[in-house]
Length: 116
Image 1 (spheres, one colour):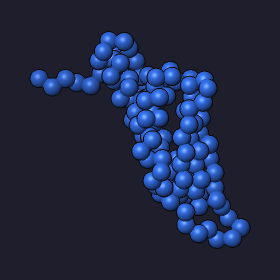
Image 2 (cartoon, helix red, strand yellow; image 1 turned 90 degrees about the horizontal axis):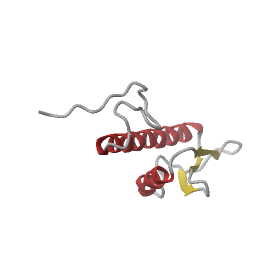
Image 3 (cartoon, rainbow, N blue to C red; image 1 turned 120 degrees about the vertical axis):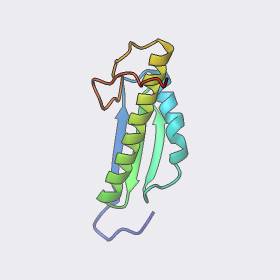
Image 4 (cartoon, rainbow, N blue to C red; image 1 turned 60 degrees about the horizontal axis):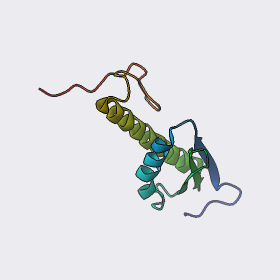
């Protein structure tokens, strides 16, 4: 981590995603795991799965801007992973078409159009 001026930081955040099916939590964990040790951007991120199948992110950053950037990046990756999972289940027929699913940014999301 970079040096922080005395009297400020490090800044910490803990994000807990509960209510996900355990297989979704494990899939998101596996998807985010390669980013865990990369210190992007200048922050330390640890991932874990709790006993109830929830995904937890522990973030330590040297500044509020680095904390915000790290949170934003991980939240986008989580939303993308949830959307891909929803789309995959929809294609497999295990989720009704148009169901926004967990993490959807669009509550009226429709199925991706198939190419002719």
